[in-house]
Image (cartoon, rainbow, N blue to C red; front, side):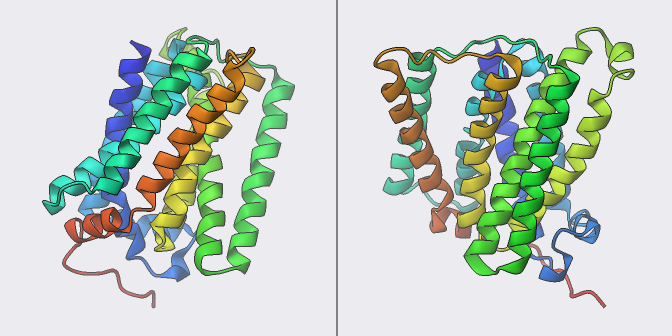
Length: 296
C-alpha cells in the first residue's frame, strides 16, 4: 500500500510541477526569492491548478509516510518526472522521442533494481530527539543559506544550479517534516495540533515553495529541475537513515549493485529533465495570453 500511495502522490506532484513552471518563468528576475514572486504567480490559473495538484499529492504523501520509510517513499516520488513528461507530451500532441524513452526505461529499471537489491526498510517511526532535530535544522538552514547567497552573486547556469540545489534541500526538509507530521497524526488531529510538527511544516513549506519558484524563475529548467529532482530523494533518504534508523541492505556485493542501480536511475532522471524538447513543448502548451509585466 505504501508503494501505491507514493506512486499516486508522484502522479499528482508531477502534474503540479508541469503546471507551475511557465508562470514562474514569466516573472521578472527582480522578484527572485521575494514574497512578491508568489503574489505574481498566484494570479495565474495554471499555477493555481498546479498548487491544487501538489496539495493533493502532499496529502497522499502524508498517508504513505505515516508508516512508510523515507528510503522507500522518496525514491518512488521521483517518478513524478515521468508524469510531467507524459502531461507535456499529451498537451503538445508530440510523441516521446527515443532519447526520452531511454530516460524513462533507465528511471524505471534503476528504481526497480534499487528497491529489490537494497531492500529498504518499509516502515519507520519518524521519531528523533530534540537535539537531533536542532542539529538537522541548523545544518539544512546553513546549507540553503550558503547556496542562495552564492547564487545571487552569480548568473546564468551557475545561478540556476545553486538555486536548484537549494530547492532540492528545501524539498528534502519538507519530506522529513512530513514524516514527523504523519507520526503525530497517528494520535489524531487533536494530538498533532499540540505538537511542533505542523507549524514547522507550514514555515518550511512557505520557504520551500519560494525556493522552488525562484529556481524555476531562472528560466533554465534543464539545469535546476534535474538538481531538484535528484537532491530531494538522496538527502531525505540519508536523513531517514541517520535520524530515524531506516536501513538499506548493503552487505557483500549488494553495495556496488545498489550504487549502480541508483546511478542508472539518476542518469535517467537527469536525461529526462535536461531534454530541451520536452521543456519547449511544455512551455508552448502552458503559455498564457498576457505575460507578467515589470514591476513599477
